[in-house]
Length: 134
Image 1 (cartoon, rainbow, N blue to C red):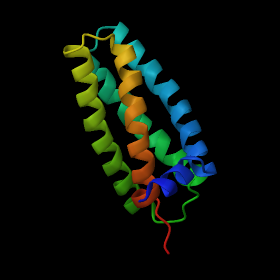
Image 2: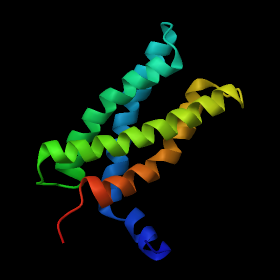
Image 3: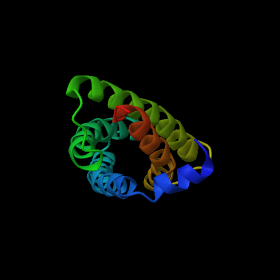
C-alpha cells in the first residue's frame, strides 16, 4: 500500500465510521475496565473481559454500518476475531510494558495502547475481514 493511498484511506467516510464505532466501543470497554479494576480484578482480567465484549459489539456495528458487508457472518466473524486477537496481543503487550516498565497509570496506558492499535485494526478489517470482492 503506497503512502498516498494510506492518507486517502484514513480520510474516508469508512474510516470516520470506524473511528466512531471505536469511540463508542471504547467508552463501554473503558467503563468495564475501570469498574473491574476498581473492584479488585487485575488489569489482565479486566482488559480481557472488556475486550471480549468489545469484539462482539464492534463486529456488529462495523459489519452492518461501517463496511456494510453482505458476506457470510461465520467466515467474516472468524477473520474479524483473528484481527482483533492479534490487536489484543499487541495491545496487551504494550499495556503491560507501559504499566510494568514505565510505571504509567493503568487507565492512561490503556488509552495509549488502544490508540496505537486502532490503525492496525482498521487496515486489517478493511483489507481482510470485510474485503469486498473485486
